[in-house]
Length: 199
Image (tube, rainbow, N blue to C red; front, side, top):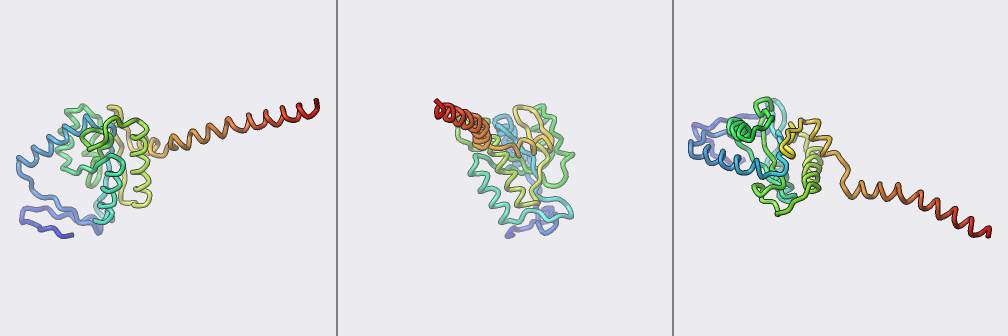
């Protein structure tokens, strides 16, 4: 990881992942807080993730790059900043999410809103697709874990988010429905055919 460590930087090692926390100026913090306040209300879903925890192996640089690439492909983005700034933005939003109760480095995934660079008119189906895609990435990259998500102005805990992420896709549900409808119709067709033969 090619990063110049300045004397004022904080160097934290989580497993084999090195995370740099540097002392930002007041103007930089103000700008990040402004971005948070803009993105949070516009995001269709905001997922609270962690990619690095003390004593555990975190996401590698290549895995982080892959994650960001995956998110761009589903109209989402990863936003990482200090918990103090997240807390201020969440309080203004009157959210129940408690970032101080979330262990390790917290990253917010903004999905489907103008603030995430998403295409306009994103649907609820797309929100579920974002959740599912992120969950599938986490299954292959165990260091990425979830704390929950803000969806439709409500905070879902970890279990609530995972339940949503594991839901079958719309295509799968339609295929199941078609299958359930198909067999009774097929059976009826056979009966009618047999009746016709006896006439």
